[in-house]
Length: 170
Length: 224
Ligand SMILES: [Cu+2]
Image (tube, rainbow over all chains, first blue to last red; front, side, top):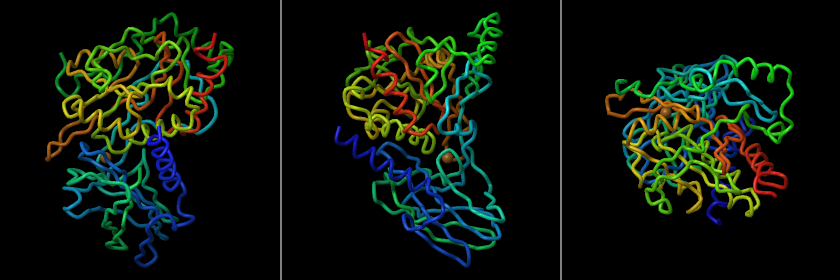
């Protein structure tokens, strides 16, 4: 039970960080190259048998930019890819959705796919988050443990390379 | 019958609902009048009539399950939260399971102990019993989860179909990694095998917790 409560608390913290957007970078790592900044970088903790992981962050780029690649040291994972979750949109929070209709084609089916690049809009902010975009880590060399730091190198069309430290969270 | 990639058809659920029922269901939906039951106040999705999964059973490879055929439903006064997923899924699955863990951690213990999480692997080839148990043990206390795994494709497809769920293996990349698209909601099944509520991916843990409290509290299941 104790473990469950602890997990609950840390997971809640991770979700809070992931959800808080870019108003305050103090919870995450911030790196800057010119006007581009990255905040709230985190990677999900994995269990010993998992060989894949995911990293998330918020990239702010006034004027817009394009994320073209991400990489991690070979001591962390065999490969990093830009991924997009596919399928159902997250449901609006709150409110009751009384669905009496039968399930249609692939309702609620979710998957993911590799994408070639991710556009950061001109006015904006790109948030990589669960159920949206993530940096997929393949062939993990070892599990991502709580508190670990995963160095991620982002490649942006205009800003060039940006190094970020993603903190492992539940 | 199907080749490897499309061996589990995506759409089956329509076939479960007799055609004559459809207009009635649509009428009920349009008039907005529910049955007046607890479903009206739940955050998740409810269906009329509820999906029945009471006969579905799969081997439970958790330490307590011992590989025995086990029904995917709650104890008499409880719920099983059934999720179809796989441990190589780094994004959607752990997000959902972490949310469930938070919701259960915030329930009163009297209610939490009546809830079990049952994950059905849609990737039995890579998800060994050990991998499944290690993965679920990361989110839930021992004895509070079931690790459903069958290597019989048809048995898995029948279980999915009963829930209106489905999954589809993707093509392997150059490293032999493949991903599995799968139904992402969580099904709350009572002791009679009725799906009382479904939470789609992204349902906040707070909404799940309050639904569970409503279902397990006074006037809910297990109360005389
Ligand atoms: Cu991915």
